[in-house]
Image (cartoon, rainbow, N blue to C red):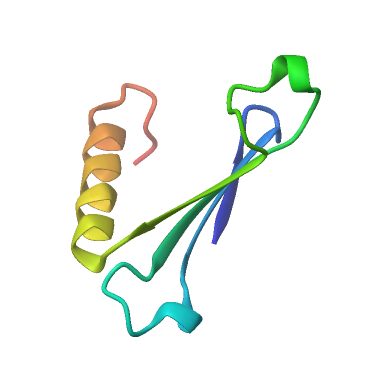
Length: 75
C-alpha cells in the first residue's frame, strides 16, 4: 500500500518484506521523494526503515488517534 503526499512529490509505501521474513523487523516503511533537488526535504531520494510488527501496530494506533483528533477528519 502506498500514499502520495505533498502534491505527489513524496510517496510512502508500507509492506511486509517477504525476503526478510526470518527477521523480526520485516515491515518496510519506504519513503521516496521526487522533484527538483532544491525543493526536496530529504537528503536521499529513497529511505527504507524496517520495523517489527509491534512498532507497526503502535504507529498505526498513533496515526489513527491523530486522525480522530483532527478537526478535519471525516467520519
